[in-house]
Length: 408
Image 1: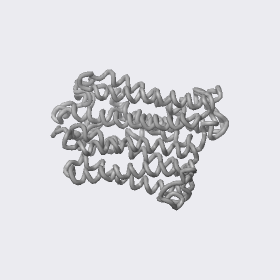
Image 2: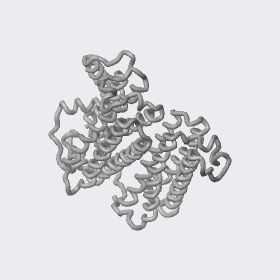
Image 3: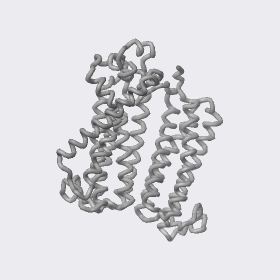
Image 4: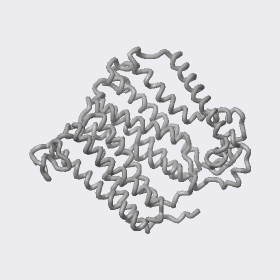
């Protein structure tokens, strides 16, 4: 395996990628300003022209804002196109640089088409949410481009710890929920902080419940980032400083985001704080992507050779691929829990729990919540266990799965 640093020979690639990341964050924020100020139709239904003109009417604020948004989008498009050209001409043989650059170009094309559809639909809320979601994917790929250009080529087979995956999934779902809240103007239906109008339960209106669920997700995400931070601080400082720093950055960005959200709600949703909320949210997402990248790099660089892993009869008796140290002794109870795939089930239970609080029947009883959680876990865990049994033959062929309880 080669660990040659991209370094100087990828300097141009890295600079373009960093510039594209900055433009992408600025474009996402400016897109929020367009939505907040109602400037989405400032250029009418003309695209790519603005009301049939190349330059806007400077006396029309809404037209200038939408025109500026389109020009920043043009600069970002140029940067991504340049990145793809550089990747193809100078790094064609380096897949870890070429692939994400070309992927970013493909996502950009989709983003441009979505932008055109959004304008034609009169900036309908679902279209705007889809547009923002794709923009977050684009930002993630650009960040990966910038990170890969400044670090060694990745080793194959790296895995991401479950605590980080859960944090990333919760963060992404929270961002999507926030997009629905913003585009449906649901914030005004749940005033007060941290509770809605001082009540623990959800508001009576549908939009109020949407905002209430968004808050539950946000607090759950905050708790998850705190757990990830605690996990990171237990890693060896000398070897995993980058991962420790990444977990701290995600936690700090999340705390800042919630603080901005609180100020925004308590000050009755001023435009400046709404734009700041979207900006910090983009930074939170960027920090999550960096954390995913660093943890995958960690498990790649300190992955145990296959000969060592195969010498153990249990996945818990093998050396820890993330820390490079012996793991705990084999345990029948742990193997049985592993069969149920608890990391996957945690995401299923999150999507099961929160809708229970937004129905017309009001707050569910604690007993009902516990029985639903228990029943959901047992049903999904049983299905996962059966799936592991049927896949036991092919699980032995993949390094990622060969240490599962059944094949090992």
